[in-house]
Length: 254
Length: 270
Image 1 (cartoon, rainbow over the protein chains, first blue to last red):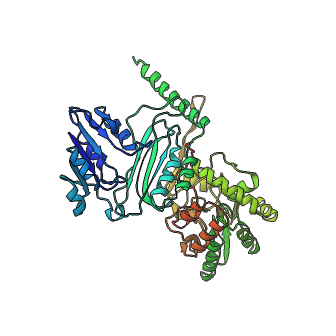
Image 2: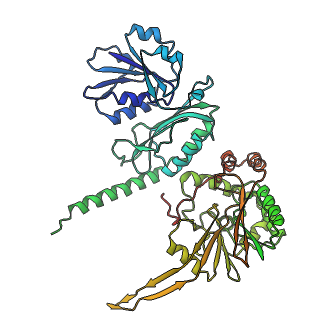
Image 3: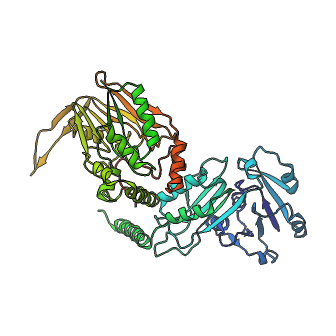
């Protein structure tokens, strides 16, 4: 069975899919994300029962339910005939308390999602900006400043941002912003500390907005990235702290 | 006598002119300045020359010191990598713009000034890089005032104005040496005050307006003044002169140009 999930950016599509993970394994496809697969990386950290599949695996027979998340940048209204042909069950998430006939007509099932400013997300001029950060480790204090500037409009009118970052504490963290939704702190992902050299696991940023100063965004983010020497220094400090904790737990009190 | 105390002008001549006009209207008889005349903003020479021409008694701020002594007089001045990169751009630009005469003026500024029972510093009596934040612990705050021998300590540097009274303070110390314990010694400190005058040219209270303080020496009344000015003119100049555009955007929101200062103990996390 394939369940196609759509809705405006920030309404909570991936979160809703994560809530469907119960005892059964789940297959997940988020087409068109290219080299910046933020949602699937986040989803994998929520449960190891999630199997990420490629587009050419969609029609392979499986007992697991396949969730097909359709991003804002895809013409999900125009995809209806194709989805019908695949026998998809269509789930539409709509901001809680809002009415949108076109979106409601698309869905076989309507789910109330996050309260976001859907008037802003409906603009036709919205652009998508994606930045790959794999291999970089970011200074967290700098990231906080950049994130605040970005979400407050310093680099264009932003309506949605999500990102995964390797930070100086050697953790991988997730940041999430949707215009009109309550502010959320960065959250640590359930991934091991990266203690050896530049991280080779995925990190990146996705921004949806209007009049985005993409070049300045990229340059500012680059200014937040630590040099190699600092990465090694932080990793040594974290390892030292971990070994001290281990040693102190070995002490026997009598 | 009414005195006006201002700080942290940061090369913002429009804000300085608006504050000087307000001081005149408020009929303050004397003006003191707590440093950071330059840095980040687009008009360093105009600001220094205005202060010099008016012969305003001034102490040296961390930016004034860094421009003279070289960057990183304090090695962890910046709270983040991003703030450091932006600060370095501003530092280099200001270095190139400032005339040698104005640099000489900044170099000869004292770090501390005492007038009767009043003391004027940029950051703290110990360092012009140290932040005396409103919520720092009472013991440390009291020590900073007592170190000066004054009753009122005027400071800036944090860019957020406040007035703090430290009263009924009792200090008790007990010294032990070679297993011999001496009798505890008790001290009582009379009323002391810390007055942070905010920032003229780089506010971080969430509005672009300049702040300074009027103080009545007879009644000890402190009045924090907030002065609106044409900050958009300053923002336009920032962009025209080739400084980072983000400085203009942040100034318009009252967020400082590039950095934040939230740690009273000034511990760099990098």
